[in-house]
Structures are given as structure tokens and as C-alpha cells.
Image 1 (cartoon, rainbow, N blue to C red):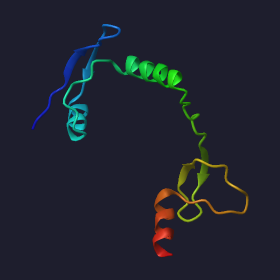
Image 2: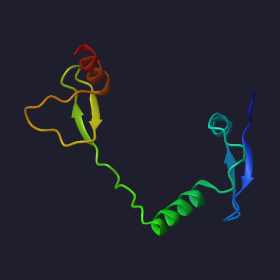
Image 3: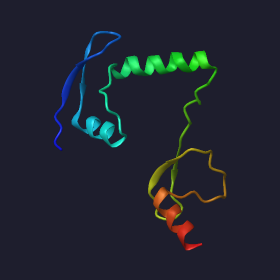
Image 4: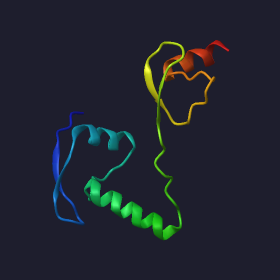
Length: 101
């Protein structure tokens, strides 16, 4: 099935937004039968207001730390504060080490 970008109108703010072919394929793969009726900004705003009313708190954005992989030397980011004297690995090298154990 071939999809083409569609222009839709947001039901909240009335602005037009594009529903890309990739997004349409994603929605179909998830089993969604209806097109979105809100633009991304209104969708996020609505989800935020719903979560505030439900008592659910969003997790804060995780701080990332820049490091150099102890194995291959590639620069990468990790979601934790590296400790001095402890090796830190990129995703690929970490997987290799986990598979080897």
C-alpha cells in the first residue's frame, strides 16, 4: 500500500498540518483506524493537561553525559554520571561485552 502526505486541519487550533506517508504507515502498523485530528502542538498540550489532572507526573528530561568509549574510542552519550576509574562503553561495545559473558 502506497501512502502520500496529507494536509489535515487541527480540530483545536484550526491550523493545517501535514500527516506524512511515514506517519500514516506507522498508524496503520499500530492498528489505528482514524487519522489524527490534532496537530502535534495541540496533541502534546492536551496530553500534558490530561496528565496534570490525573495526578500523573512526567519524568524530568534525563541529563546525558558526553563520554569516550573505553573500548573503541568513539564519542557517545550516556544517561548517567560516569565515575572516575570505571570504564564506559558505547552501545555497540556494551552489547558485545554482554554477549561475551
